[in-house]
Amino acid sequence: MNRLIYIPLALFFFVASCNTKKKASKFRFDTPEAGTLVQLGESVPMKLIFPEEVSSFDSVVYSMDGEVLARKTDSAVVNLDTENAAFGSRTLSAKLYHNGEERVAYSNIVVVPPAPKRYGFKVVAEYPHDPEAYTQGLEYERGFLYESTGRERQSTLRKVNLQTGEAAQRIPLGDEYFGEGLTIVHDKVIQLTWRNNVGFIYDKGALTKIGEFPYGSFKEGWGLCFDGERLILSDGTSRLYFLNKDTYAEEGFIEVYDSKGPMDSLNELEYIDGKVYANVYTKDIIVIIDPTTGAVEGEINLIGIYPDKADFDNELNGIAYDRGGDRLFVTGKLWSKLYHIELVER
Image (tube, rainbow, N blue to C red; front, side, top):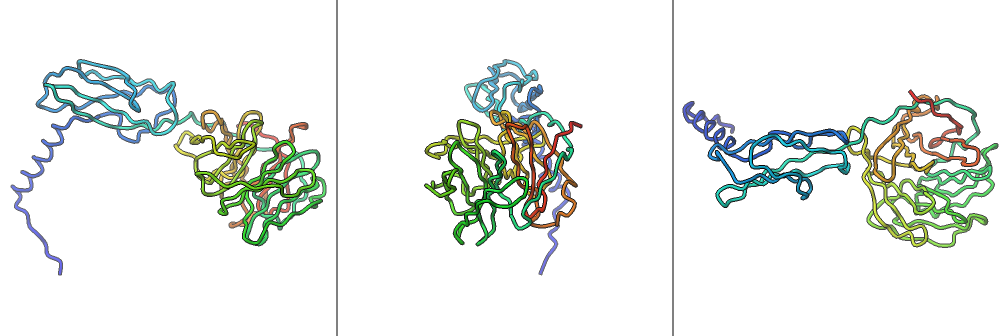
């Protein structure tokens, strides 16, 4: 049985008054509020609320991620310059020294890049694509597409004629494997699996498997590309991982951010002119990422490119680039078309 508990009005105001005084006496940040989004380069005022009982003090030391920004002997606002700040959550602290005691206040900001450039598209040409190919990875080289397809008991590696859409070679993966991202590294083709924690290495000429490698800290394989020196891998989160091209060992990662915060669901990847192009899972959007900073610098809106797209298991997923002919190709899971497109800046 529920019972109403009555608190005398005088007692209520006494408790409220005590809580207000307790809050007022606490050393804390007034600005910025925790979690405030800040664009790179923006100046952020750091304003503190000092305890009522502290009328003077020895000093206040302001820091970001443990690095001292300023030392002050007064309560004036300190402006934080974020010009060289790393993207993501940055911890702010202020240490108050008074009568031999130290009090610490904390807050944080989330540093994000400026809004990305926006692009639409123009279809230059259409090519046939196998409507039963659940595209997960795509590369172009010398008139052929190298394609990784997924789905349980249906995953394959294919070498596909661009003009006809027909597979010149088709290598089935074992029934237990779910094919994912793919890239070409010189004379090898590298293919990921989804949750099998293993990647496959193929001889590009014969398209025969010559090795495999285990995953590192990432637990799922999604997209893969090659920047000429290292492999770049996505796992469906906001991270891009860097792998050694010879040993396949993980050598680091970056967090990807756009102007709204972390950009997750990064899927199939392609490396083009120093940037990583990434499909965003379930969206008809490709983002353009600076792999040195993690900033999303561009966003390509491809809504409407494939008019027969269903609501499920039919996502845009497949980016390939013809470096010799400067052609950008896109397709999707179970699409009957592959498109050569040009970007149109908005």
